[in-house]
Image 1 (cartoon, rainbow, N blue to C red):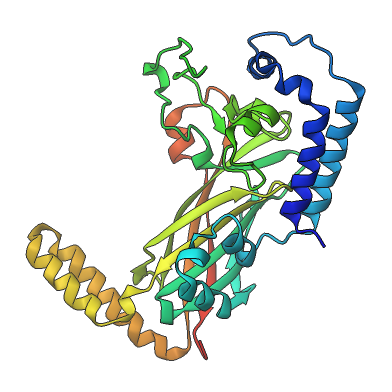
Image 2 (cartoon, one colour; image 1 turned 60 degrees about the horizontal axis):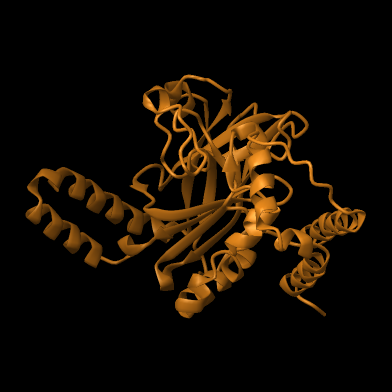
Length: 334
């Protein structure tokens, strides 16, 4: 049986056979891109064969996507395969200690549902992974994207930005929504330019521009009733059905008492940070003591804001509705 990737490659090969005319006329690709940005009308007709193949592609993508569960197993074998390839012992520990649907309690939020999907407590690898999903409560009206997908290149300047369009076609005085981090994006730029625009005005980049755009921002994770903040790296992506998935990797270096000694050395080297280092050490000691209970509480904090064209930047970045999800990490037998 073909894998999903092999299946998609065979479909793309069929499309390439039917779209040679486009490949042989690169100027058409650029004209299509400019049309999507509202710069130039595209009048070249597309053959019926191409239309049929593209429809079949859409159906095939839907069929393949429908069979995929976007959990941590999928993530670490696809989008985040670096751990598997470069740290196999960490990867094996994470997979071996996975817990689905941990005990959790979500705060009331009128716009989105947020659920902790999986947690892996892998102390042997000094790693705690957490995956959580966000989806709109009313998908007929709202569409969710990550806050970091807005102006991902950091070139938005607000009112101080120039309204002149630059060489890359971007107006620095307006927001752009990026779609470069989609799970089904191909890594080859030439295919991206052929099958879709990387970024553009939010309404044009949404799956359905008639819906209202919700931007979700991850604020942080605290452990042991706030005694210890989670120092983590994290990734976020949208699934084909429009859900947001966050993957968190939290360091567990505080498990070792060497952590305390390192923080003491840090405080001696940077006296201005002594209070902060002492707080970390106290939190680590309290956390190690509470591990004897066999589980500990965590709190995820996030915010969601509805994007409105022309809205005030302070409202965009600091407003919105904040929410929390309290969940439990089980350590017994781990």
